[in-house]
Length: 120
Image 1 (cartoon, one colour):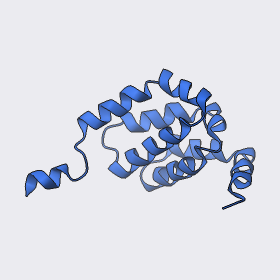
Image 2 (cartoon, helix red, strand yellow):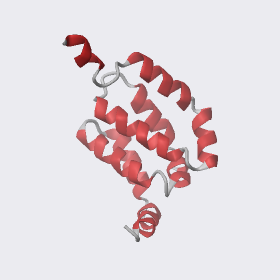
Image 3 (cartoon, one colour):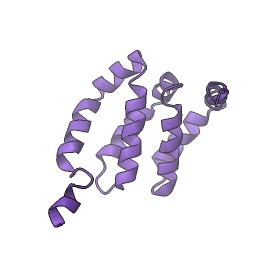
């Protein structure tokens, strides 16, 4: 865990973020979830690099796409949240309307457990 930052830096230097972005653009299902999980791990240490490769637009689009699996939406939102810890990237997220996206998602989808509570 101590070498995490170095490993993240090396991953980004070797164009790993760009490769994950291509996966998000061209694939669906479980592969997208894995790519988002990788971005989630990188989001606090490599936020600028993730933003620079254009991932914010693609991740927001994933959140806006109807029919996405709840786990995929959750992971995408975790990535966006992790990016907010870098001030410059947070400003980019606000310009992309991420706050409004999160509010719309919480209003449009029932909270976990609320469906179960209604059915009992």
